[in-house]
Image (tube, rainbow, N blue to C red; front, side, top):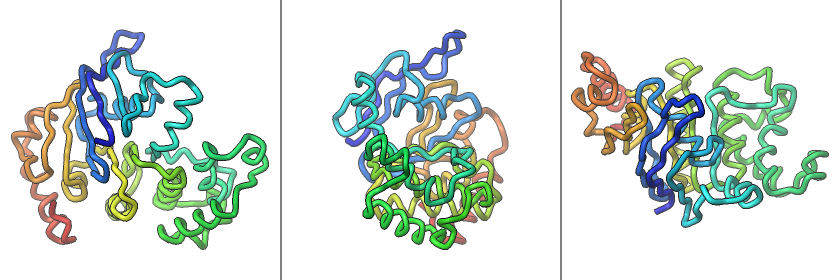
Amino acid sequence: MLLRIQGLSKRYPTGDVALTAVDLEVPAGQVMALIGPSGAGKSTLIRCVNRLVEPTSGTVQLDGVEITSLGTTALRRARRRMGMIFQEYALVERLTVMENVLSGRLGYVGFWPSWFRRFPHADIEEAFRLLDRVGLAHMADKRADTLSGGQRQRVGIVRALMQDPQLLLVDEPTASLDPKTSRQIMRLIVELCGERGLAAIINIHDVALAQQFAKRIVGLRAGRIVFDDQAEALGGGQLTVIYGEEDWSQTIGRAEEEAEATGTLA
C-alpha cells in the first residue's frame, strides 16, 4: 500500500475539530476523488499528508515511511515524493514558466545552484518535455502573470511532476476555471497519473467531475469519512449522507451524461 493513514485527527488551537480518526489507504497508481461540503476537512486532510498542516494525532505512512515522525531534514526528503497542486496555482508571478517549473527540483539541488537558478541539463530537458506534453512548450519564457487560469494550472501540474513524485496531492484544481477548462485539467491529471503510474488524491467540489474522472470516491462530512466506494456507487442517498438533504437527480444526471459523451464512464 503506497499511502496508509491511520487514526488521523486535527484539532486547531481555537478548539475547532477538522478531522476525527480518519483511516484511509491509497494503493500505488490509484486516482481518488475527495468530496464533501465546505469545512468537511478535505484540504486539511491533504495538507496533513505532507505536514503542511501538523496532525494532532494519528499516523501517515508513505511507501512504508512514517511521515508524522520525521524531523525537518527527513521530511524535506519525503516531500519530494508528494507533489502538491494548489487551487490558486502558487506560482511566482514575476518568474517565467520555465523558472516556475524548475522550482519543482529545489528539493534535489543545493542552495547555491538553486539561488542562481543553475539546474542540471537533464532537469531542463525534462521540463521542456513535460511542458510540451501539456501544450505549453512555446510559453517557456513567458512570465507567469501573463498566463490564463488553465495555463497556470498546467504549469503547477508540471512543477509537481518535476519532483518525480509517487503521490499527487491536488487541492481544488478546477475551482477557478470554466467548465470546459475544468474538464481538460481533470483529464490531463488523470492521463498523466496513468502514464507515470502515480497515485493521486484530488480534493474537488464538483461531484460530476469527480464521478467522471475518478474511479474511487471518498466522501468527508464533519471531518469523518462517510463514503468510500467506486464512483458508480455514488447515488442520491450517498450524496445526502455526505452533503445533506437535496434533490440530487440533476447532479447525477449531469455526471452520467458527461461521462457517456466523453467515453469516461467509470
